[in-house]
Length: 240
Image 1 (cartoon, rainbow, N blue to C red):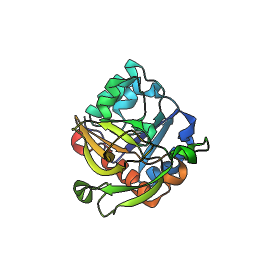
Image 2 (image 1 turned 90 degrees about the horizontal axis):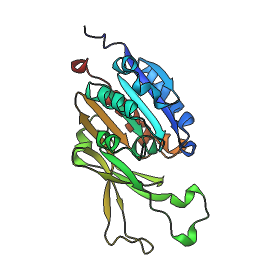
Image 3 (image 1 turned 180 degrees about the horizontal axis):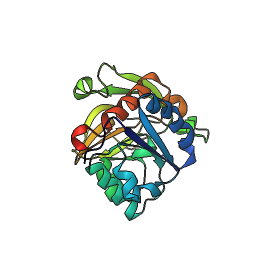
Image 4 (image 1 turned 120 degrees about the vertical axis):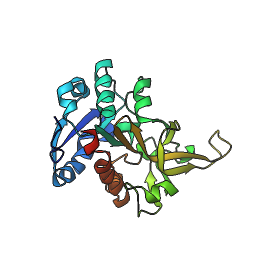
């Protein structure tokens, strides 16, 4: 029997490294989800992924779990739900630096944090700001037409700039370029995906790499991308 697709259910899963403020950052978006007609459930661990009943009734997973570990049953539940139509989205380390030991998770999301280049060593003071660099998020031609990023122009940030390892199954909506610097070992600029989508079975995945802290997520461009990504990733009627 088909589910009533007007009753959208979102599952917010948060935890992992506290430096990414999983509670504070996810709380920014829960009111948006509720205003958009979602019934929102919040879980403080990934245990829910192994609950087949809960996952089959979920239209959207918003994940904010940096590093940490995931069990085989939990990953099987998450990947199976996405393949069956559940949307998956998140930002920064909460989705692109999750479960480093799991190659199957990397296969699901299509890209993984490798590093965030830092400032000149003589400018570093030992805090997170050592890795804050001014950079631009450049919308691709595909991104200028895609519902998640349409009508947005390129925008500048001064925060962590993710260098991502990825495969060719992702659809890149925005990139960022890591320039050459005297203190870095690479010899030419490197273009890295900054925002991407991925179709996985009947499901949709959206990854937004900016989002290190609350202030970055409050940037109007970043917030717009994440909120649109939630709506776009949500289970479609054809997947119900």
